[in-house]
Structures are given as structure tokens and as C-alpha cells.
Length: 416
Image (cartoon, rainbow, N blue to C red):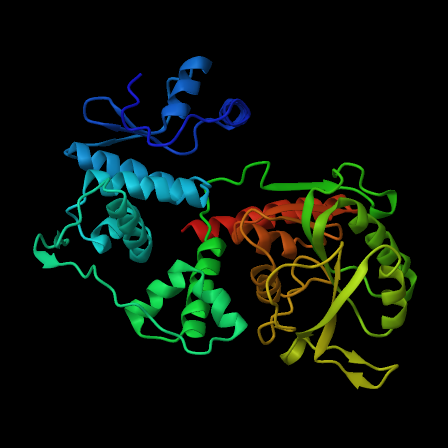
């Protein structure tokens, strides 16, 4: 089998076994790509597994008329878009492309690979320093025209820098941004941080939801959910029932969180206000209080509490941590879209738009999120369509079945 265009190292034995098991169960979900001569451009491991399993009928695509350079570029682009690569692995793919086509402009290479042009520029300069590629005075753009390259940058000076500025200046990307954009050190630092965070938040949805991405089952939180491994969950995001008879469930939730959350993991739990002091008392049993956020519920979804003579337009979202929180800064006002109180799937259902806000603020792609009060599956939908992994449990089998269907239907909408 020809693997001239396999740009990444072989899968580990565990990764290969996991892929093989998935193909055996569901078949090949992503087409294997060939050139017109039968050489594999993408899907070398999938094809190898098909041969081992005796699978001959699998989806495939033939890419004809590509040059050798275009084939390698195509293979790198697919890997950068699909595989969960480390920063070092991404940089390596970009460096290989630069070595192969140093005459192309940074913007053109960035477009070919689907990455940021500043990342390409950074890797080019490193290769020029080590003389792995020549330092060119001109590069060629997409239109085939040669243009001068701006290589020499003026040094920057910061007089009487603060401690924050001194720290920021140790980041070469910050200095480079100051040279390119004529901005001050703190502005450059904030821009770089936003871009890096945006890159970390980026995700890609596959054609199917694999079992390791979404797991739903019937279980009672009061029994401890032994099906979930200890210290395996990044976030618990949930909305337990608020009535007085359910207050002990918040204590069960606290005990569960202390066991299954990873160190520094977070428990994000919605609460009513009628028994708010009791809720806090229950949650304090096993977890460390961090903050209380305001979740705004504007419009017709706001409840009228007759016994308290209150129209409530917000609800508390309690944030507890396991150990010491060391993550991102989080704004403490969350918001549901107006009149977005969705009761279609469960009588206590929450706004999908509001849950999207919570998922996006707190979590990152491939974080594992648990909701032990699954209900109509709102947390699961928001998690899966944002590229997170999700585990959901509920005491009622019908809620699990409703959520399974709902999550898949919402996921399919995102693929269109």
C-alpha cells in the first residue's frame, strides 16, 4: 500500500485499535481519498483496516489532476483540519510545507493549509534563522505575481514598563505584533491572547457522533453513578429540580462532583431562589464555593412566584470547584435569548441559547461534560454541537430516549 502522502506519524496501537473497532461496528464514515493512479492521499489507516477486516465496499474519492506538491498540500490541510494535533505537530506540518514551497507567500500557504498567515510567518522566520530555507526578498501570491517581502523589523522600546508589560514582552509573538501593527505592549498581548483562545476554541464536527463523544444512560444520582470513572470529568453542568423535596439531591450532586471531577474541575449548577440558603448548604458538603453568576431570563420565560410576590427575571448559577480554579476569566452575567424557555422536550427544560452561552464561556473542545439531571437533553445538545464530549444520565428512561433523538437531530442541522 502506497503511503507517500501520509504526512503524520502512524497511529499508536491504542488509537489504531479504537479506529478499527469503530470501523468494524459502523463502517468507514469519512471517504478514503486516492489520486487517479490509486495512491492514497488521505485515509491510509482506514484503508489498512478495511483490508484487515475484508471490507471492500467503502466510500472513496478520487482527486485527479493534482501535482505532487498539490497532493502533499492537500494531505496536510486535511490533517490540520481534522486531527486533534498538538501545537508542535501543527507547526511541523507548516514547516514541511514551507520547505516544499518557500517561494509562495505566507498568505498563500496559510490559505492552502487553512491556517493563520501570522503562524506561517513565524515558522518561516525560524526556518530562515536555521538556514533550512532561503531568506527570499520576494514571494509569489495566489495571482502568480511576485511581491517584496517585509523581513526587517524595527526593535520596539517600552519606557518604565510595568510588571505586566515586562512579562508580556517575553512573548515573541507580542513583540512581533507590536512591530507589525504599531500597537502598545498590552494591546498586543490582549490581541495575541484572544487569537490563541480563539484557536483553542475552534472545533470540527465529524459526520457521525461516536460513542466516545456522547454517552447517555439511565441512572439515579443518589446511587453515586459508579459507571463514571473517578476524576474523569472536566465540567458538571446541570439543572436539578428546585422544589423543597428535592433539596437532598444537591448534596448528592456535591458528593458526585467531588469524586468524578478532575482536579481543578468545575461544577456549574442552576438553582431556584426559594430555598437558596439550603441549596448552598447542600453543595458546600463536598465542594468548594467559587462564585455565583446571574443567569438572565428575559421575556415570557420569567416565572411569577405567587407565594413570594416576585416576578423573577434571573436565576443563580452556582459555581463550585474541586481544588483551586486556574482557568480563564469568566464574566458573571449569563443570558438566555428572549422568550427562549424551551419546554418541548421536558417540563423543566432550559433555553438552548442560554446553555450554549454557558458551554462556550466555560469549556473547550473535547472537554468532557456531565449532566446527571439530563431531562430533555439541552446540556447534551449544547455540548455536542460545540465539539465537546458529553455524558448524560437520568432516572427516567423516556428522558434518555428523547435526548438521544434530540441530540442527533440537532447535530445533523449543524452539518448542513
